Image 1 (cartoon, rainbow, N blue to C red):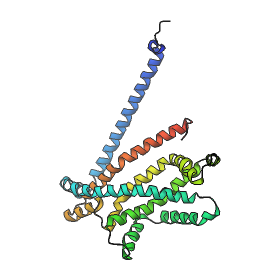
Image 2: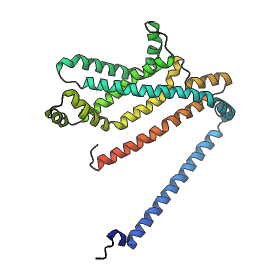
Image 3: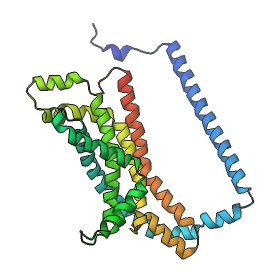
Image 4: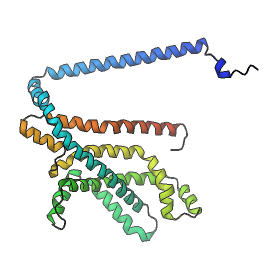
Length: 288
């Protein structure tokens, strides 16, 4: 016994080293082939577009660098409004969606009116396009003159919360229904009430099961916050419209689109990472 750890004396065999080298060469070759095919495809697409008869007009109308640079500031200021609406809407949607999902999970005939009301809400607002909800809320409710004058951002936020709460509620309900009934029975046998069972046992497990779907809803809402411009709110889309009206050039729309892509891309990638991690845990037999 020399006292030297086994890991310090172990060395990979020649066969193992050759296998590792082979895998490295295969990985390098795959990366080079993928990069080459991507470059060829991009070149073909670019050449196909730039050789079209109307490319010159399109380039001047949609890809004017001077107009793009001049519109970055106003559009970015409008994007800050979109971010504010997004944060407020996300918090309110999480609360209202959880409430609706909980109402639909209530047991007993005495709660039938609440279940019916929650089901009617989710069915109706999942069927009505968000744009129509924006018009109904943004123009219909103020016309009643029972509320003081509020900015368009306020009514746009309300419409987003109303519409997306229906989708999130159904996603959460699906996750809660996926929790095995034995979890509820075990919680009740320990003396927990129905509300405590939902809060401590069912909802946390249900949320973990539908994290990818909830993240996709959030990504979708990141894009749809731009629709509040139809109510007159000067967000990124409305700022781009004003720039287009001023310059008679559509480049600001492209700038606004790029801003929304930059806003959504981190969450999209994060959603992919979380989904892959959950799938790996599930396939390996871990508890999701």
